Length: 263
Image (cartoon, rainbow, N blue to C red; front, side, top):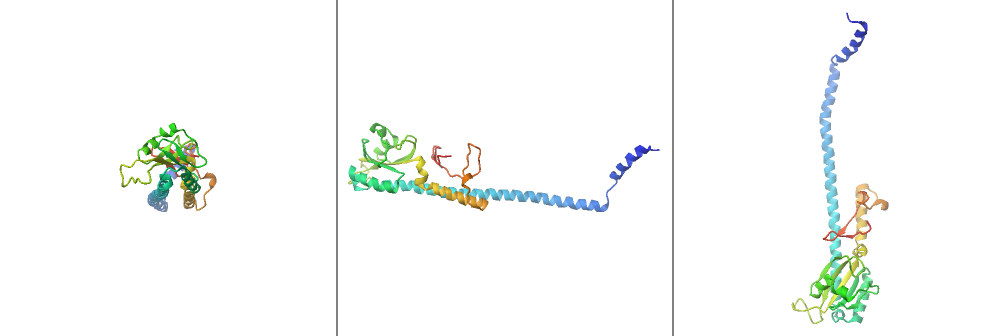
C-alpha cells in the first residue's frame, strides 16, 4: 500500500503526465505550423524593408552628392571664367594701374567675396579691392602659385597661408600683352599675374553652397519625416558623437575641409 501522503503527491504528477486530448494536440499543431510559416516570413519582410531603406538612402545621398558636386564645379568654373574675362580687358593687358583698378572695383561689387588683384611679374601690386591684406614682394614672389603663373601656367588650389591673411581658395592666371595671344603664339611670355582669392569662411556664400545645403536639408527632412527641417538639430557633430542630421562637405584633394568650417 502507498502511504496517504505519498499518494497525494503522485496523483498530480500522473494528471500532468497523462496525454492531452486530441483537440488540444490539434490546436498546438496548427499554431506550430502557423509559427513555422509566419516567423520566416516576418524575417523576410524585415530584411526586405531594411534593404529597401538602405538602397533608397544610398540613391538619395548619391543624387544629392551629384547635385552638390555639380554646383561646386560650376562655381569653380565660374571663378576661372571671370578671371579670364577680366584678364582679356585691354587695360589689364596694358597693366594700366588706374583703369585696371576701376575694372577690379566693378568686379568686386558683383563678387564681394573674391579678392582679385593684378601684379607685375616682379611682384608689384597694381590693382586690388579697397579692403586688401597687404603682402611684401618677397612673400608673393616665393609663393608656388605665383612662380607657376609667371611661367605662363594657371594655378589653383587651397592654400593655408594665403593673400587673405588666412586659408583661402585661390586661382591665378597669367596676363599677356595686348598683341600677344598664347593660343596662336606659343612662345608668348606673360607680363603680369591676375589672382582671385576667396577666404575659406566665405566659400559657402560665394559658391551658393550654403543655400544649396539648406535646400538639401529641407528635402532630406521632408523625405524622412514629412516635416520641415528643425534648425536646432540639423547639423551632425562627429566629435560629439551626434550622428543625426545632414551635412555637405567640400574637401580638397589632400583632405582639408574647405566648407563648412564651423562644425
